[in-house]
Length: 309
Ligand code: GLV
Image (cartoon, rainbow, N blue to C red; front, top):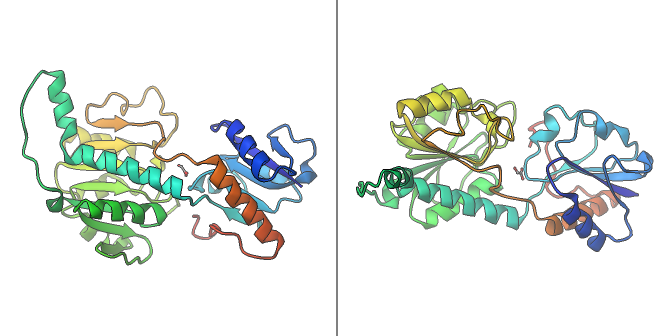
């Protein structure tokens, strides 16, 4: 029995230390240095290249290194019937809540305007609405979306939520499915996306959707870049329909040098850092799930193959 680690993005050192501490008797190999494919029973992966997961005949668990699992459903060729788990962890949730609060307050308190004024040495207060008079719309009400909704609600913002399946959260006006999307979007001052990437949500933030938002609203993306038609967003920013976009994710990452998003005056960019998986707490979850599978139990945070998240 061995663990195989594959990620071109994450430094394996923390993960190696974490697994060596939590499960010291289990060998930990870093792709492509596993001596024997038959030994591998747990694959801990981020964006595994096409087909590699099919090389391990005794694989029992595919564990995503993050909360998102779209990297497994888009081109990774996963072997059928092997349980896939994602990371749900309070440290991931806390970081996302921090990030979205930071971006929301940045937009709410007119920071894009003040930063631009500072560069021009302009001292010019602008009208500041109260949080209770701002409507914030959150797309995606899963673990992260509902924690963000609660935190923003505690700051007195007016919260609406939209999700593909019905969700009821206290103090949050909930909208469901395509039929209620337009109604959800009208009146929103700040739109936040925390959706998982699936065929249903790919390109969902497009010219049509953006045109349903009130003129001058802002957009924050902590979900996935492929949910946004970037040329439509840039057009909406150029015309001022969207006054600012705060993006942690882009369709292609790293963002290509030629992208207009880099230097757009109405865009704030961060390099997919909103929420970083903690190796220690996550490796505990992964080992616990492996033990559950060995004991005939369903792993925790199991991914639904059909829904794709
Ligand atoms: C990060 O994007 C994650 O999916 O955890």
